[in-house]
Length: 465
Image (cartoon, rainbow, N blue to C red; front, side, top):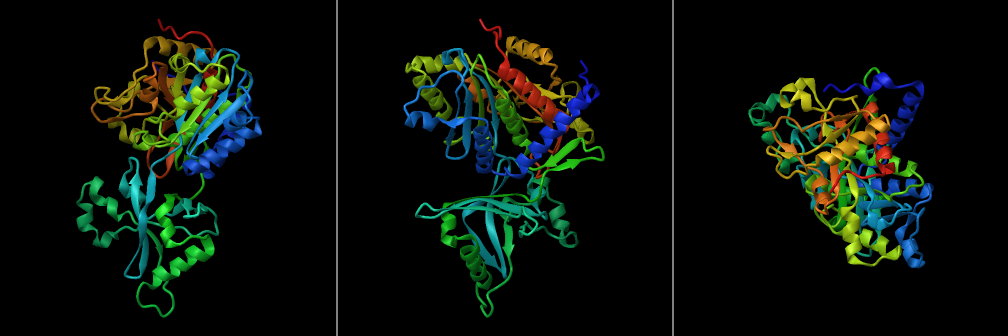
């Protein structure tokens, strides 16, 4: 079944709306290269349209009622927004769930060293990357340094034209004969992904002169010491802004589109939808790229606890109500899919691949090879989703993640499905996924937002018995 290209149907009004959305999306990417930065932007945008922190309601002893718009945030890395509907919370939510972490390099806790008058930060890569893609390119440093007294220093170095940038060096081809004989996974070793940060010594210092020079910069220009790096979270990301791509400007080239393209469109949809019958929720989480672990990953109990708080503040303190609410919820796991690339056509099965420009992508299942580790949405739910998309003129396609035996991947879908709710993966097709710079279609960004708006407004039954 051939799916049509969204571009063929766009009116001038659609094109203008698409361009406006994509401009806002690029700004979000530029200002949100880390989880903390994404959370900061999310809170600002939500509060601007009337959302309030759940703690404000709790501190005031104020009950939750239909029409309230609330958000809860944890450790500045995970956030849930709720638009309270007129139906009982026990009847469940319409949930959009995306992740805001992306593959990158992380600075180690004891990272700083000098070797032959060159100074480096030692790193540990985060998520699935091709290590050779991260060398010999301008990199920026984002994150926080927290001192023993709790003082927090926020860093973003390498994004402004006046900022310095950093890089991981590579071996020149004239001396690279042995390197070029290695397999791609070994061309650059993980322990060699060290960030070059300086080379100027203190005048007259013959030993550790560069280290002393940089320590002076750390303290005078940025307000921390080398020892403070023990309690720092510093992320190394590609330096530079999201850009329009192609002569026709039809695509977006940017870092972190997996999965911030779905996070942003989910947020935009959430903030657009106003009065609802069924409570809506957008959940933006951390740690998906490393298994959704930790206190801010989807495997934590944090979201469940927030739902329990909401029910209690709505007058229902029964633990059973929490279980019922979650089971009766329905979710789109807003995550990206692999876009078909004709340069690597042999890795895809074209009938079941996602194509740029054909709209939002539904992955009924993910997993690896024999669907291992997958959420597999049931047919009734897929039928329900198809009706919503067609009723709202949303261009959509279905896909699998490449050929059956080649590999696979996972999302947060299977974790939320543990509650018994209906979940399906739904997102944007991406070229060069997990590379420092990824590619999406503006049309698919637009269709994703339309899809998420339609889903949040959806009522009715999915066909469960």
